[in-house]
Each structure stands twice: as C-alpha cells, then as structure tokens.
Amino acid sequence: MADKRRILCIEDEPEMIDLIRLILERKGFEVLGAVGGQEGLEAIRREKPDLILLDLMMPDVDGWEVYRQMKADDELKDIPVVVVTAKAQSIDKVLGLHIAKVDDYVTKPFGPSDLLESVERILQKQVGERSSE
Image (cartoon, rainbow, N blue to C red; front, side):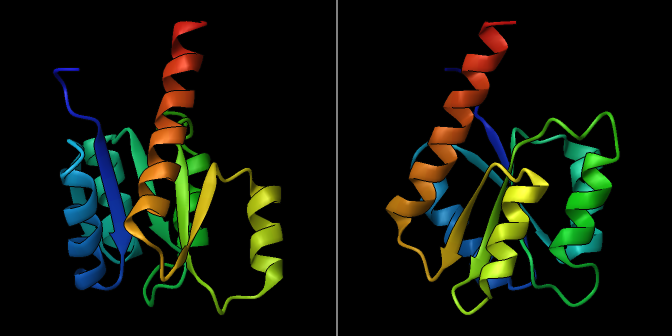
C-alpha cells in the first residue's frame, strides 16, 4: 500500500497526540494532530483524513460537537470516527456512542495494541465497503 492512511487525532493534550503518533507511525500510518475541537474541525475540512481519533472532553469545542458538525457535512460524514474517552466517564456516554453510530471507542489509559486494533479494524472495514460498492 503505497499511500499512507491518514489519521487525524483531535485531542486537547499535545502529549496524547504525540503518544498516538508514536504508536501509529510505527505501523506506517500518517498521523496529523489537532489540539482542541475548533482546530480539529478545521483540520478535518482541510485534510479529509481516512480516520479520526476524537477526544470527547475538550475545553473549547467538545468531541460531541465536532462529531455532530462532521456528520452534518456531506463531505465529511463518511469519515470513520474512533472516540477516545477516559475510563471515568459514565456509561451514558458509551450508550450515546451507540446511538450516535460512532465507529468505535477506546478508553484511556489504553495500550498501544488496543489503539492499533481499533484503527486497523475500522480501516479494514472501510476498505471492504469501498470494494463492494
């Protein structure tokens, strides 16, 4: 696969973006980072990544708002989203993910293999859907 799959990580902690970049670039993904929801939305529109890793709890524009705006935009609504959420967040958040049709979620703290499994599974599914069109 010559062209790298591009993953956009939207997170309010730059250290977390660096960690995710470290994990995924080793596996040949290109990782773009955006700090906060507003920057994230701009990056989604500009880059049109293959997958988005989205933190829910951000101070400016939270992850739900980013997700909502994305899904309302025809150019962006088909980009898969993996929500990255802290373990402490309540079960209604997780139920909300199912209702909102989020592709997957990873809870912090996560191991590198958890993140990779989720990303690879969703991108494989996406490839499968594209080839069956």
